[in-house]
Length: 96
Image (tube, rainbow, N blue to C red):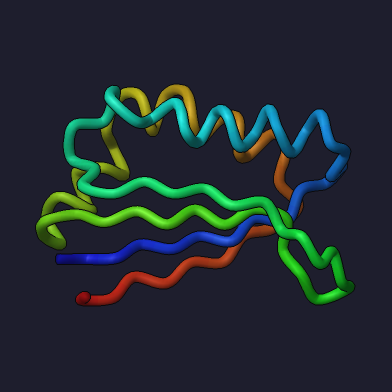
């Protein structure tokens, strides 16, 4: 199993933007069949070093993770939204 975690810092982390972005990420459930696990969390502490949203996904293989990156819904709907609202992001991918 491959775990893919991405942390996002929004340019404008209002409650409305956080919820819209959380909803957009969660909308992959049922649309991206490669996902074995999908979890989205909004930061509660909101410290200077905090990121605003965490995405945790799991895939059966590295090949499935790579296919996810170009999946039509992820690439066509989710990535454009994230690029429009994010100031920065960091990711880690590891075998779990």
